[in-house]
Image (cartoon, rainbow, N blue to C red; front, top):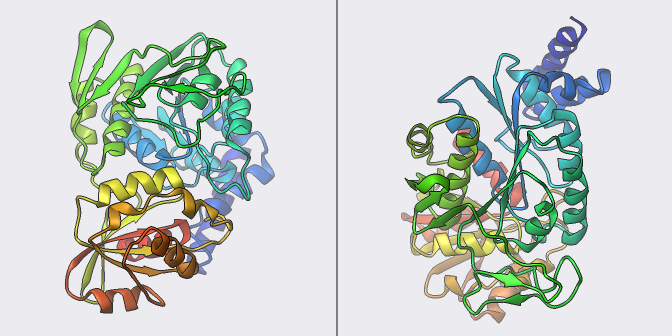
Length: 406
């Protein structure tokens, strides 16, 4: 009874936040719940099949796809709009207390806490790479925290781990109930040394496998994704179709199919549900500014920029880059020098955002012709009546995505 009263009070606080346009109300709701009942997440998770999804890139999309797939079987709650810290998780669990399933996106550093509090049935580990090092730990530190957190899992919990990522492999390899997945990702821009012993890691010529003299190596995956075809145990074969463009989206869809199958959803049902999603929280949605129709793409760090630029290369000829350096973006923009912007050559490129001059210098060194403007409206005026991609960092993207939602 007390929990219900606290949730009602927290929701009222969230409503006030929305009315006063202070925010979406999600964080306020969760903060009130956790302030008054610190153990609320544990209580709200009891009796549910909880899935935790974490990694540097792809969390929101994968969570949304898993939510969609699980919803074909039973009532499901989720925080796939990106509120992946303590309050956001509490709010998601309180939002739909009747839900059988909970698909929860979790920040990399929050994952150990989420494991303790929710006692999940499945944990999906996507990848680990550099992401805002001015406020987050070095990659190996995060991997070590994951490794320690997985030790305390009950045997009933299944970990779906990415065998392509040496850090994920190292964090999960000692767990007794791990299912390995490979999407054929080539190389890893942050994995030059072995996470086990520190020696230089040996990568195969095609960049699809790795090993070390100490014995650490890529595990043999149970699930293999190649050219949109997913194969798994007992001769399972699934054709993966994603309404979201890009190679990463196919991998995320495959993970959602595997995860939902672990919880009793047929692959045919999950595939059909997943294929219907074409946008997640504004990603790949369209926003018209002036006479330009922009397709919104989010990029946050070197790995996501590499994937986004590859996806965008098959899109419209015009592209706008918007880079900020606020707290949520990461104040350190030195990562720009770890991104190969060559896929932008031959396109009409416009740069804006708070750190537009930093981006301009980087593009100049990469010999990318471009124009620098003050804001997105000026970019639209310059591009005119056309289709264009708009690739934005975190704060710029979410500000623009609100225009889509309205």
